[in-house]
Length: 412
Ligand code: HEC
Ligand code: HEC
Ligand code: HEC
Ligand code: HEC
Ligand code: HEC
Ligand code: HEC
Ligand code: HEC
Ligand code: HEC
Image 1 (cartoon, rainbow, N blue to C red):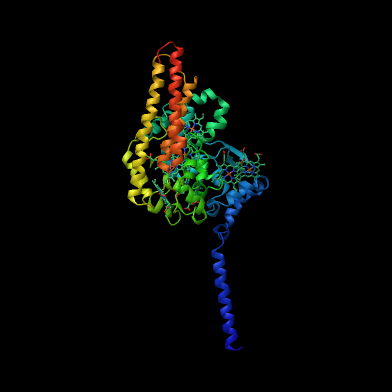
Image 2 (spheres, rainbow, N blue to C red; image 1 turned 120 degrees about the horizontal axis):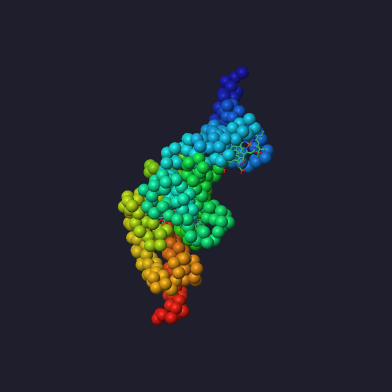
C-alpha cells in the first residue's frame, strides 16, 4: 500500500473521532452521565413499579440533578428522625416527605430558609401562634418581631375552613410546621421530583403565590423593563447555571430569584428572601426593618452588578418618597375609621360594614400595590392600580363615615 491511501485513512479516522467528541459534547449531560449499576439497583425497584403507574413522577426525577448525582428514590423517601415508617413492597418508606428529608443533605439551606418569612411567619399569618411550639415562636419573633406571636387571622376565620384549606393554605403552607418538628416545604419552588434551580428561577414559579390584587409582584414584574426583557430574551439566559458560579453572563436579565435570592457574580445565594428588604412594604403603614441600612445595601449590591449607581439611587429615592406619601394617605384614612370605633359608631369587630371593606381595600390592595410597584418598576401599578383606587377609596370611605355618623344622629 502506498503512503497516500494510509495518509487519507488516518485523516478520515482522526476526523471521525474528533467529530464524535464534538457531537458527544453537545449531548445533554443527563444522557452522557449514565447511572451507575448501584444506582440502577437502588432506584430501579421503585421505578419499576412506579413508571407504570405514575410515569410522569419517575420521568421528572430522571431529569433532575439528583438522578445525575446518583441520589436515589429511597434517599428522599426513607424515614428521617421523627417520621412515621411504613412497610412498602420490601422497603421501609416514610409517608410524608418534608423539609426534614431535604435537610439531611442540605442543612445550611434549611437553616437559611428557617430564618426567612417563608418559614414560620407565613403559616402564623393564617393560623396564628397556636400552630407552633413555644421555641419555634420565640425563634421567629427574634428575627421578625410580631410575625409569629399573633392570633389566627380573623378574616380567614370569617370565611371558614374550606376557604382556608383550598385558599390561604395553598400559598401559606410554604411555612407550615411538619409533624416531624421541621417547618415548611422546599418543594413549593423546586417541585417534588425535578429539584430544579431552573424552575425556581422562573418568575411564574414565585408568581404561583406572589400575584393578585394584594401582592401583585408577578404582574408588576411582567410590566417592568426587567419582565419585558426576560420575555424577549429568556432563551438566551442560562437558567440552569450552577448557583455557586452564577454570573451576569448567565443571567443578564433579572428574575425574582436574581434580586431576592441568587448569588450573582460572587455574592452569596440566600434562602432568606427577607435579607435584602429594607421596608415592611406589606404592612398598613410601612416601617423600616431592623438593620434597614445593611439590608438595603445588600439589594443595591445586586442592582450594581448590572447598573451604575446614579440609576439605582434614583429608583430608591423615588420609591422612598412613594412609601412616605402612601403611609400618609393610609394613616389619614385609618384615623377616620378609628374615630368611628372610638365613638362607638362602628363595632370593634372587623369586616361587618361596607366601610371596613373600603378601608381594607385601600391599604391592603391599593397601598401595598403602590409601594411594591415603586420598587420593582411597575408604573401602571403605582398609578392605575395604586394611587387612583387609593384616592377613590378615600372619597368613598369619607362618604360612608359621614353616613354612619348621620345614622347615629351626630354631626358629620
Ligand atoms: C411492587 C411495586 C412497588 C414497589 C417496588 C414500590 N412501590 Fe411505591 N407504590 C406502589 C403502589 C401500587 C402504590 C399505590 C398506593 C399503595 O398501594 O400504597 C405505591 C405508593 C407509593 C407512594 C405513595 C404513598 C402514599 O400513601 O401517599 C410512595 C411515596 C411510594 N410508593 C414510593 C415508593 C418508593 C420510594 C419505592 C422504592 C423504595 C417504592 N415506592 C417501591 C408500588 C410499588
Ligand atoms: C428529592 C427527593 C425525592 C426523590 C429523589 C424522590 N422523591 Fe418521590 N416525593 C418526594 C416528595 C417531597 C414527595 C411529596 C410527598 C408528600 O407530599 O408527602 C414525593 C411523592 C412521591 C409519590 C406520591 C406522589 C403523588 O403525586 O401521588 C410517589 C409515588 C413518589 N414520590 C415516588 C418516587 C419515586 C419512584 C422516586 C424515584 C424514581 C422518587 N419518588 C424520588 C421527594 C422525592
Ligand atoms: C441524599 C442526599 C440528598 C437529599 C435527601 C436531597 N438532596 Fe438535593 N442535592 C443533593 C446533591 C448531592 C446535589 C448536587 C449538589 C452538587 O452539584 O454539588 C443536590 C442538588 C440539589 C439542588 C440543586 C439542583 C441544581 O439544579 O443545581 C436542589 C435545588 C436540591 N438538591 C433540592 C433538594 C430538595 C428540595 C430536597 C428534598 C425534597 C433534596 N434536595 C434532597 C443531595 C440530596
Ligand atoms: C395566592 C397565594 C396566597 C393566598 C391564597 C393567600 N395569601 Fe396571604 N400572602 C401571600 C403572599 C405571597 C404574601 C406576601 C406579600 C408581601 O410580602 O408582599 C402574603 C401576605 C399575607 C399577610 C401579610 C404578612 C404577614 O405576615 O402579616 C397576611 C396576614 C396574609 N397573607 C394572610 C392570608 C390569609 C388569612 C389568607 C386566606 C384568607 C391568605 N393570606 C391567602 C400569598 C397568599
Ligand atoms: C422561595 C423559593 C424556594 C424555596 C422555598 C426553596 N428554594 Fe432552594 N432555591 C431557590 C432558588 C431561586 C435557587 C437558585 C438561586 C440562584 O439563582 O442561584 C435555589 C437553590 C437551591 C439549591 C442550590 C444552591 C445551594 O445553595 O446549594 C439547593 C441545594 C436548594 N435550593 C435546596 C433547597 C432546600 C433544601 C429548600 C428547603 C429547605 C429550598 N431549597 C427551598 C428557591 C427556593
Ligand atoms: C407557595 C407560595 C410561595 C411561593 C412559591 C413563593 N413565595 Fe414568597 N412568600 C409567600 C408568602 C405566604 C409570604 C408571606 C410571608 C409573611 O410575611 O407572612 C412570602 C413572602 C416573600 C417575601 C417577603 C419576605 C419578607 O420578609 O417580607 C419575598 C421577598 C418573597 N416571598 C420572595 C419570593 C421569591 C423570590 C419566590 C420565588 C423564588 C417566592 N417568594 C416564592 C409565599 C410564596
Ligand atoms: C430588579 C430586582 C427585583 C426583581 C426582578 C423583583 N424584585 Fe421584588 N423587590 C425588589 C426591591 C428593591 C424591593 C423593595 C426592597 C425594600 O424593601 O428595600 C422588592 C420588594 C418585594 C417584596 C415585598 C416584601 C414586603 O416588604 O412586602 C416581595 C414580596 C417581592 N419583592 C417579591 C418579588 C417577586 C415575586 C418578584 C418576581 C415576580 C420580584 N420580587 C421581582 C427588587 C426586585
Ligand atoms: C441581572 C442584571 C440586572 C439586575 C440585577 C438589575 N437590573 Fe435593572 N435592568 C437590567 C437590564 C438588562 C435592563 C434593560 C437595560 C437597557 O434598556 O439598556 C434594566 C433596566 C432597568 C431599569 C429601566 C431603565 C430605563 O430607563 O429603561 C430600571 C429603572 C432598573 N433596571 C432598575 C433596577 C434596580 C433598582 C435593580 C435592583 C433592585 C436592578 N435594576 C437590577 C438588568 C438588571
